[in-house]
Image (cartoon, rainbow, N blue to C red; front, side, top):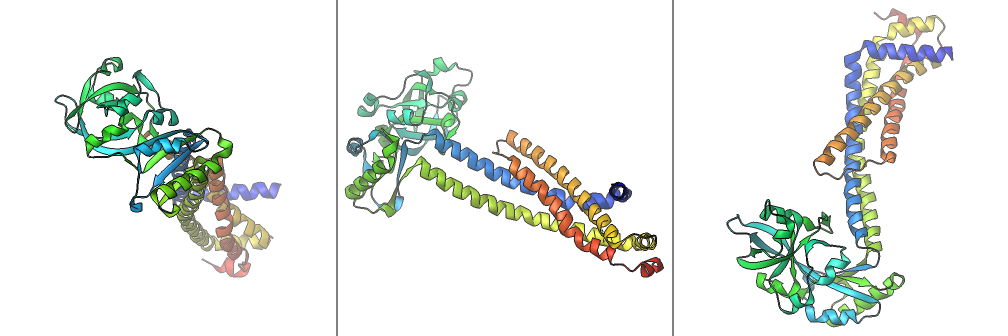
Length: 393
């Protein structure tokens, strides 16, 4: 126990007596640890964000996507046929159309315009804070009405209360559209930022250089237990109706999307972790080089200690402990700075999620580097001949 205390005291003394060298030695490790935490944390945060969006649809929702190279699309009139498929509760076709939006003399701006049906709102769990939702009458009459996202409403009607915005008009591609509802703030959902989006009736898309062809839709099933069977029925319907194979379209459940996201997340984490791990290896090489320099400078000290009875193991442990202490201290600082920078990035809108697992792995890696890259210098010091060491100037 007394010997252990003595080794630790000597190690601390040597680290403190060479502050600049110790700081530069730890710098490589600190940068490496920060890189690991930030890269893996940002990757994990992005995955968590997308996963939460997928889960927001619920497990009873199917996403149908027809590839652009299929040279075939569904028609709005065929939605009733999909509704007749066993276990299908509701269907919501949707398409994104581009257009400029303006109000009065305000500068025109590009906005995300989503053409869809009333069922889309319930499937995506969207609500309104004022006004009303889309209706089937709007679809049948090709009505030029819209629901407006909260952020877009604030931008176009600055200083106006939301209840007073309902009933007012704005221009989409030069045509007047009446605002019938204000969407409740919901942020981003499945690639669409609802707060900056305009939602119009699906049939009204024809006024915006669009048509009523359908390549994307959501299908809500009545009973989740039979979702696989329902998926097969929908695939069979699309294949037979459009005369295309499943190579040209996908019908995916949220579970399959989550599995895909999990695989992508694991691959991404390994890739980012590997890239950041290179920094740790470089830092470890720096530690080894500095410890070798330390051995050279302290050759006479080693000779004196051996002459006074110190064993090879005592010398080896002494230098190994110094290397370990440098790396553990560098790892501690790196973890703290990594988490701190991650929190700052969150304030700028980055998705950052550092789990306790990655923090533990990062810290353990720094300790492991201290041992692995400290072994050779420590071994070299322990092998020194005391007579030769004492002759060193």
